Image 1 (cartoon, rainbow, N blue to C red):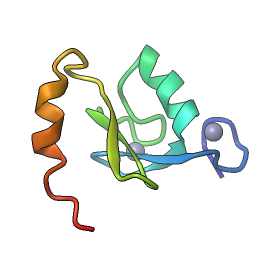
Image 2 (image 1 turned 60 degrees about the vertical axis):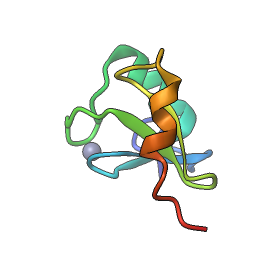
Image 3 (image 1 turned 180 degrees about the vertical axis):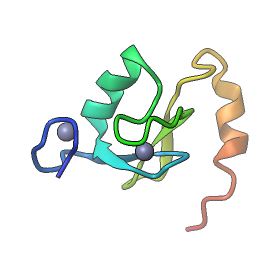
Image 4 (image 1 turned 180 degrees about the horizontal axis):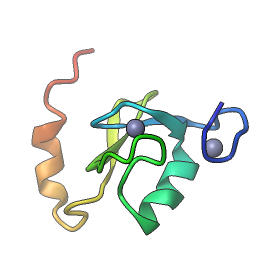
Length: 77
Ligand SMILES: [Zn+2]
Ligand SMILES: [Zn+2]
């Protein structure tokens, strides 16, 4: 289950560095306070969302969306 709400995953998402899993909504709310993993305290830059494999949130530079396309270039489908 999700370590933040201690309930079933709702929209599972994971962090780019430590790959710990959370509800997307939980970790998104958490990231507004601090961009570090609630479990292992590693700072993270992005939250990945499994179903779309898309980069939904870029903590570091949320203003420059133009750079996102380059980082997502390795998705194979
Ligand atoms: Zn949760
Ligand atoms: Zn972690």
